[in-house]
Length: 380
Image 1: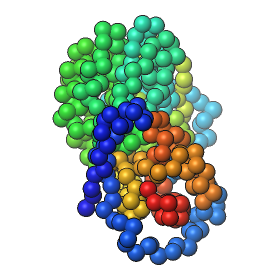
Image 2 (image 1 turned 90 degrees about the horizontal axis):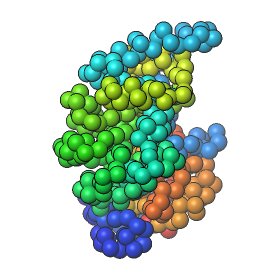
Image 3 (image 1 turned 135 degrees about the vertical axis):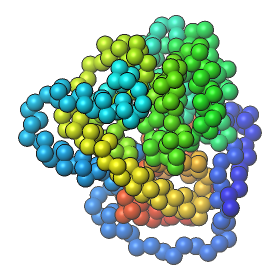
């Protein structure tokens, strides 16, 4: 059973500038017997285990790999003739016409381009703190002011506070769901209501890069809001659940006039192997669910270790876990690196918290060993 540590909003604002309370806390006490000493897994001998970038270490589907092998000799050709077919497949999956779909070099290009389109010297962009900052950063570089709204006590988006932060100058409200770095997900009914009401005033951008890693994609996606004509954009990527981070391909689902304006500003060019791999991935009927279950097993195993170590953590629905170490993040990074594990960068204002991506079972065995060694005596 989990208990919940309580902190007042005033305390968190005083110490970090954000709100923190009610986070999951293990019920296992230090008085319990210590875990059996482990043998360092062999994976550690192959070099540092990379658990900092939220990649999918399980790799692409076999169908995608075969497709890339079959087309490798044609990489001297541009992929233009194949792009319409991929867009049609995506549009069918999303239930929209093809003019709603914009492909990008990863979803990152869409965030950058959309941000450049919406930016203005007198405008504001609302996002979460901590949260993923690429779209807000793109707008700020063009002169917009960033308004960062602290997450709520569960480290989820505080929808009421975000709505209250809207002013006549607001050009965009951005949410990453599940949130990066916390991995938390917003109640879908509340998010749907929020997006419908807010989009009557300002555009809403919902980044669903990690949603296919969650327990229930269908219940939580906001793609239907685009189909229904709301001023909402939803982005996805092939970098996460599909294991194609190296091929750099993502897409946005948005209203056709907005899609036209975004395309006009794009400067990147998607690659042939990325297109054929994405097409094959979407046609693979079993890969996503099989991969999601494997990610969940790894996520649950990591949570078991964190509960054993009395570490608070945010309830995760991505392919990563965000937890409190009780150590300055730079110190914790160094200690984990010494144990052959690379963990994520700092996420202000939660500077004694760490994000760890879910790796392969062998990689996670290295991470579990390192966590027990570093936090088992210091204890969070």
